Image (tube, rainbow, N blue to C red; front, side):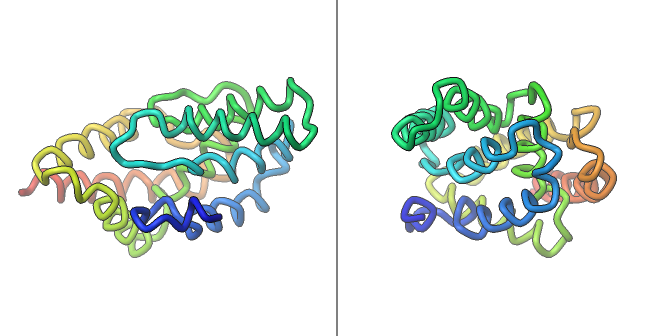
Length: 180
């Protein structure tokens, strides 16, 4: 929890973790290894430095070490590691557990517009070190990649509930990014 409270964080905070865990309570039972998915949720953004490209790898390594130290078997610890790695934006979820985890992590994209707009402000606040022109270009690329997916959500419950709103939120955000 101390990591999620670091002062440079604005989105990758306990608020995001709480939102993820609340949704886990709803769709976690869809997972093959629900306890591993829950553990991966706790660790998926544990290490987050906006200037680093290896946040997921560092978080995944920490999750594996913590799981092994707690007596979790090696295979389960490796699955937790793979789950955290699946939260990289370019990664394609492999298997039901990764689909559940990634859908939960990306649920913010399908949040009600006011929450989505807050999320967008929070992300920008985390990247104040990045010049506006560069932030806009990189952010556009990330959001366009989500829009290019045939489906943002792999699980039926979240796909049915969030897909259309996520696409509307992304389109609205992309329009704002292009207008300046």
